[in-house]
Amino acid sequence: MKHSKVAIITGAGRGIGAATAKLFAQNNFAVCINYKSDSVSANKVAKSITDIGGHCITVQADVSSETDVNHLFKTVDEQLGAPTVLVNNAGILRTQSRLEQMTAERINSILINNVTSYFLCCKEAVKRMSTRHGGFGGVIVNVSSGAARSGSPNEYIDYAASKGAIDTLTKGLSLEVAAEGIRVNCVRPGLIYTDMHADGGEPERIERLKSNIPMQRGGQPEEVAEAIYWLASDKSSFSTGNFLDLAGGL
Ligand code: NAP
Image (cartoon, rainbow, N blue to C red; front, side):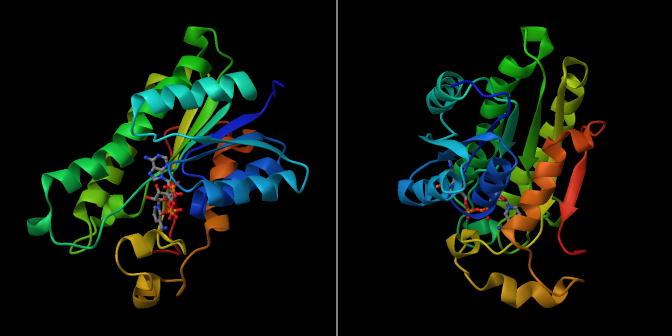
């Protein structure tokens, strides 16, 4: 069945992506929950959506692979209809490290998963949404990070630099497609309670750092999802090329 409001959320099996998928479904979007490896978590998110009468599909795709991204968008075309919203959210980080310890393998893996993936998904979205290609417009929201501005010294400069690239992608693409019915905006979360920090080797990272946050607490994935939803909705209809920092004042 084809739907009029279709959102693709990459990396939606957990964390910010999962909260975003649920919020879009609550707002009558047909949602594509993309995941890379954890089908159990993706299916749980899907069940929580169908339990409240929402509509969604799960699609396994490594968004750093062009073949997989093509498969992801083709599946959405066939099962839900043309995407009206793309949320580029999937991302990785590696164990905290100084730059001298970073290998080319690590740096390239960060860049392909955090940057190439966003470019590939934007490309497929623009091909479908742009009035230049016969589309009816749409919205892209990129999930960057406060790290793009802090640089994450002694932790992960590679990750921070990948998010800096997402800020530049947002700016450039927003201008490239502004007259073609597509808005492109970005959220920059600060310290958000998800499993990502465990992947960086420090599950309790936010507890260590939260006294530096003016609001004295970390954020919840749902608080980021609300901002993503606003940027994707008609409520932000004159906003493009903009950045929303969600970091409790940090
Ligand atoms: P998370 O809990 O680690 O979840 C990330 C998800 O991305 C995972 O479910 C993973 O899927 C998926 N993923 C990773 N690489 C993928 C790929 N190549 N293809 C498809 N899916 C892939 O992360 P999060 O904390 O929610 O972060 C979401 C976004 O917010 C990321 O872009 C992150 O950089 C950004 N962010 C997070 C924070 C924070 O404090 N948490 C702060 C600033 C920015 P599988 O589990 O299936 O492998």
